[in-house]
Image (cartoon, rainbow over all chains, first blue to last red; front, top):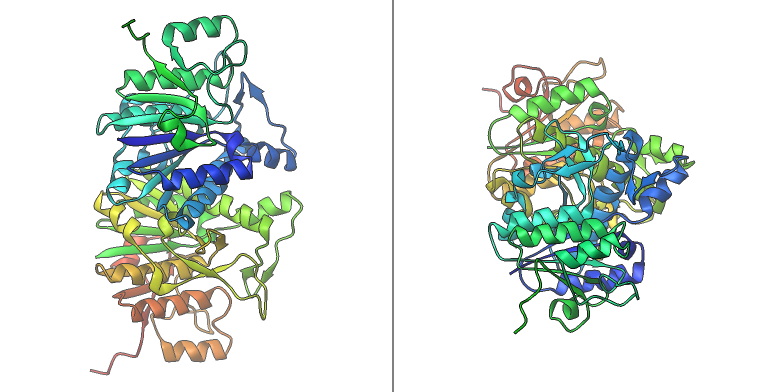
Length: 264
Length: 264
């Protein structure tokens, strides 16, 4: 079973959490892939350059300067730092992004109703995971930054949860895959702030309608359910603090299911 | 025969030259690897952030902030831009750096007589080109940025000509290799500014002593001769404008030889 883990930006921003996560990831047995988010570094760098970050619905408006900064930050600094640290831990990591080997062909998002600029959405049926499979066959561990490109070679900023989910589905056509979206919380929370141990499509729809699920949780859930539809065997949303405990069911986390299990 | 081309920063800074070079590189037949330099973007970004770039003997003093910027610029923006553009040209490029898969294990340069900061020198005998070979076996084209790491995972800024030369030697243990150091001039120039068609170790020593060869040409020549000693079959230093012409001997360029050819 291939394990694809996506680690969120708030974990990357917290040195103690990142170090613990990387130790867990390096020690994880079996074929594995890491997708990482961005964190606050891009916004901090933009502010240092006098560019004010603009977000709409939790998504970054990406003009040409912003694209350059997110590419440098996500695919450059964060990707290479993670790769170097994993290699020092004995995990032979290779940091890529969706533009490498045309791994994640994407289209720029339509400019209406909101023009997000250089923001892309992967074309699920055109994803070609050969580079990921070739690296794993050579005993290497792919680490993927959420930057993609269109057919003309235009780089595009892309949601990291979406990248993880579509890549998991593409890999599921070749091998058994489980997907773990790891972040700073212990799972999807209900209105009282408790972790939901299980979440179906119908239940999610109700939580979105009532406003309990919103913002950055939306692409995690949309992507996670699409991954299940795409043949991924298991989708977990949970905390990054103890990866083996989440993967073995010993720590609480939210497991996605397309439909409720029938009552026994 | 594997062709390893290093393209210099001044070519990367010139959009017309870069576009022409990438078209030539994409069209080149046979296994190939691209190593790229940095260009002026890192210094420009540093100045925008109020950091004054410092150079000694043509080499950059790399403090922690500078390291972050060169990693972002070289391995992030330039590497991913080149990869995306090559993929759009049908060349399935994958952009890496020397820290990926511990490709180029390096040591931080000793702080005396000059403390260059986070600057590294690859440990030639520990270079492990498996990731490069695995990518090429999968039909992919490695593109390498001149950032390396030490055994503790510390990223290090590294001379791109040196990276190209040591990587060429490591690959020469597995396959036949030729190395082309492509830049903005047509070759190594003599005191009158004419391209030297051939250059030996002895001749180079004389040109260094007389001050004709200096600065950035030094690591090209040191690296080039080391590559020949390491089993690389052919080392050329020349212009980036017409790659096929240089490789077939139809355009002038400087060919390195360890010793002069005996007179027939």
